[in-house]
Image (cartoon, rainbow, N blue to C red; front, side, top):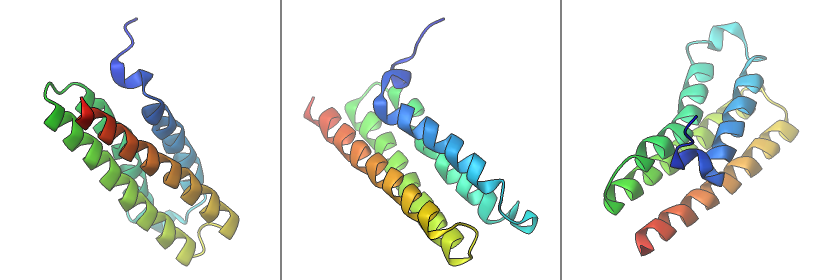
Length: 120
């Protein structure tokens, strides 16, 4: 089986694990949020890794950097959804802090990845 370049990225691997954590977290959200915050949170979280994968297939540095920027934007959107989940008491303060710290790490790695690609 072929391993694609995005699968080798530590940033993508962390995004993959984060998505799994979010899917597990949203299982405890109220059922009436299935098509609201739950769906939005899952989509923005999935988009972090999706954009990294799609960008890895692009040829130009500009295109690759664009998709990393889109991944970063999805991570920021996810932060907003985590804040909403905390404000609505769907997650505890400890969960909120834990997920924020994971997102801080992801956004830092995305910024570093973008900078390293633009240097080349």
